[in-house]
Length: 249
Length: 313
Image 1 (cartoon, helix red, strand yellow):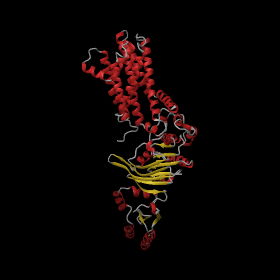
Image 2 (cartoon, each protein chain N blue to C red):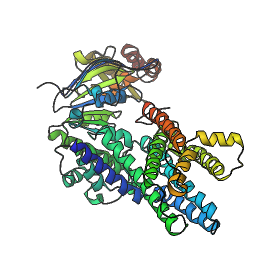
Image 3 (cartoon, each protein chain N blue to C red):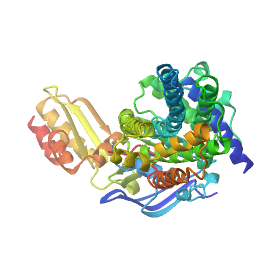
Image 4 (tube, rainbow over the protein chains, first blue to last red):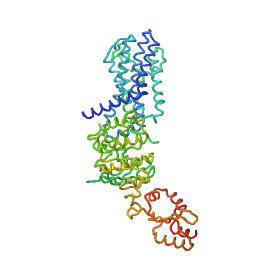
């Protein structure tokens, strides 16, 4: 077991090193939500009510982009470029490998949530989170849920060239509908139902409670249930559909 | 000591398609064994079953005493795999990649030593994305060697190489053989099989058509495939046309040819008698039935018929 832990740690260190050497990964996984934060902050400057909504919404999007988007990209890339196949032929245990890959994604999530939290305190007039435990619970639930969904979604993407199209076809509509319903009290009922059934809006609700309004975990219990159900669904699909190699056409 | 690889009655089906239809091979410890065949013959499928990438449909397989389908770490610690393509981290240098890979194994070789063996020492600190295709394949080799494996799988190791890079790869493979490694090699290059392999199995349509040392294939009865002739007779006729024929009885064929030529007062330019090369055997065995028939009427006529034709010319 210590050996497996050591190998996981080594893989994690390697993934971090590669992450920072890859400018496009660093930008899309890291800088983009922060740019949204800065741009949103500039537009909504002085409107505290809107800033209160912006911070948890950007935090929710950050969780989704660092896990769902990043892992869908990564898994397709690693599969299509033969890295998964190569790793599979070595004595590196599967758990150590994916542990390192997942920890890399989670590190990005944690750093973004930290930055958004600090920015909320320093520049957005929000103060420190109301409920740190609730923040951790929702971030962890969101990470597990979106990471599993990202890996599962990678199975549907046929080749690396089409990854951006596939990922954005899911990411952008989910973000827009979730942001819109979260922001607007007058959203049409069918859009509201869709947003509530998808995992991002419940995640934003939970983060909103933890960071801004102070609504407790109990108060956001139904949101947490939706996230967990998607997480279970995603995990089953992620494991069942997994392929180590490029599919031969 | 038992064989490094033992395969009996191996079958692999993909839906209705049967890629491997009953392959039997045994590879001794320290042997370089070549699987030779055209694309789609079932070579890669066979090797990937031995490597543990694919499950077999039927048959017995033992690799270093393990069943590769069980995917035991103990087996993967002792094998090295050179893949057909890809799977290299572009943002890491060869030295970094090898160091990381070395950590997977209990008793890896020295990184510097492996870099030198494959000829990458001077490019050891260049990110892999900036390496040439040939240099990437050398890194590929290095990754297969870093764990100091007993058995190395090389799947078409020189496909796409220029002649110089091929020679370099061959030298690396031969140096591995000198270290006592067992090597299973697939290739569709005949000269490669001839240069590297102690024994060769010619594979087509998921079956082994012939098996033996490359220089003896086709010339010894036990491995001699039915229908293939033992000798090739060739010459240039009076019009300068090159004539080639096959025969089981070169004495008689030569006698007939030279007698007819003398009677016409002609020389048989560049007259030669030879055993079929590995290439001849290979082409004959792997050609489609239709292709054999058409090429036989065009360039490889029956001995008797052609002896008459030669007399007419």
